[in-house]
Image 1 (cartoon, rainbow, N blue to C red):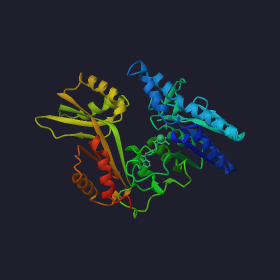
Image 2: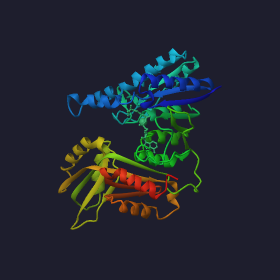
Image 3: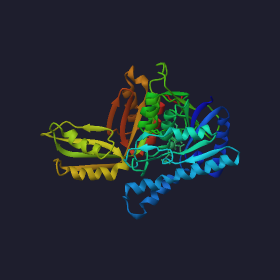
Image 4: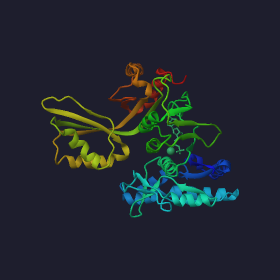
Length: 404
Ligand code: ADP
Ligand code: ASP
Ligand code: MG
């Protein structure tokens, strides 16, 4: 029996008729020795166009209709790619989430995959047909269309690889692998041959959009080897390794950053037990992910409580805070929409001290003001003004000599 692999092609990789034709060639080559399952994103720019279009009739359209609309881009590219394969004599069929029962939770725009009907995919493979599956979309129990969050096609691909027990999931994109930081921001960034699952979880979680965090979580949970590589040029890309890394390799492996963040400070909340829960509980109930959290020391029994959320959740967060006013006493809310997060990631941090001070020195020498700091075993995250991101990332990249 031939090996089974999943190949996922991102937006730029299927961004034009020429690109789709070239992707068809990659699939044809792989299908000589492997059973290939394909997952596609919408053509580049298409999802953004649809999101803009969705705001035509008000800033906050129905969540159900929003997902019904923004999921359509993937259907176009899947059908086009099947046609391109037919043209070169390869049997292929496009499938939507509904056709392969890609079932998700019903939290629109950030739905989580529950299960998928592998039989439909297997049937196609048994007939020598290459299944081309729409990424990013799912269906609820009642058959409504959902989407998996920006970059969600990566997760579709890894989930299918896990379900089908594929040998590997190859994520084809517009860069030739995973770099020490976004190579479009720091041209000196270095491509990594391998990165540990643990590090990739932190990098993706902190904004390295080269692969969606949920995809890495799936790969980790179901032991799916994932490779990130270019659809534009040949090369072996970067393997997200299931093995532990030898500690010889640097202290910091990479730097991730995330713009489009919001910082909320509830000023003058009473410093009593349960206060964090009464703020974070309702946010969590509304499915809003809160990241960096800081509570100040109290003065006269009152304190400040600060947290960050993604700008996508701005409207939902304001609504929750408005509601909170009924049950929680605070003086006012200070909102900062000009912030960003920068994170240093590396398993070497576990065993080495002094990383934070090297980072803070580099930032101070570059006049970058730190607003918040949060650390975990293998990560340091700082919150800064959005305008300072490029400067901060470059300074840190240089301070830890990541270009070497
Ligand atoms: P696709 O459409 O193929 O899913 P994305 O735009 O979602 O592609 O992801 C690829 C982009 O991720 C790259 O063009 C690059 O700018 C960005 N990126 C951010 N961090 C990294 C990193 N550490 N290594 C490589 N690329 C990165
Ligand atoms: N098309 C979707 C997006 O732009 C999903 C993806 O590209 O992975 O976010
Ligand atoms: Mg992507």
